[in-house]
Image 1 (cartoon, one colour):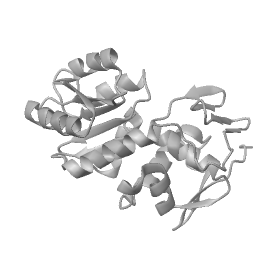
Image 2: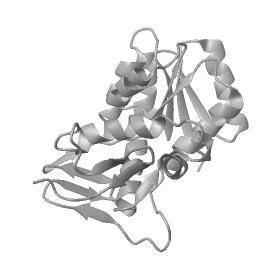
Image 3: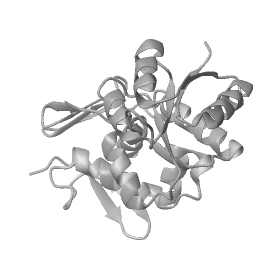
Amino acid sequence: MTTRILVIEDDREMSRLLQLDLQRNGYEAIIGNNGLEGLRLFHDTRPDLVVLDVAMPLMDGITVCQRIRELSDVPILMMTAHAVTEEQIAEGLDMGADEFMLKPLRKIEFQARVKALLRRAKPFDGDDKDEVKHYTDEYLSVDLDARRVHVHGEEIRLTPTEFRLLATFIKRRGQVLTFQQLLEQVWGFEYTREHHYPRIYVSHLRRKIEPDFKAPTYIQNEYGIGYRFVGQPPK
């Protein structure tokens, strides 16, 4: 089955170029020219990935992202014409985005990010010898096969990237994972130079799963090296 990608972009020339580029790489590309049309197309087509501009008429990309996240865990790649700060990335994560890219998009980098996002959205298998399928204590429960996370008895929604990050920690419980290991195992080889990513995404994941994200219980720092998932239930 052909992978379906929805591009929501009000610049018709750019959306057409993205559509042609995606089609040349074997994807089915659907185009929405504003936020409202894009949201309607999302409901109608149920794509495997959404490429979404931030600034659009009728409904901006942030709102579209929020609406999509109410319905689906589909990977969302957001595009912006302005430089993205770490604070803006964190804000985008709050809205449910998985990734940001600066326009104009470079073809090789764009295709690499698309492949990486689609790969992250697949079931997390880990190593063949690794039989860890879940983690449970009185506060946090994670079912890796079902891709379900419960915090204090309530189900929470994670983006594909957030879930893969948490799954990586759980499958390597007690081990120190370096920043480089996290980049390779969670994001892929395309991201090995994005050294700030683990810190930003871990901080955001902590806000969702920790009893007190300022004093984390589960994901602990190994300063200058990386992080360790301790897996001790909070007292």
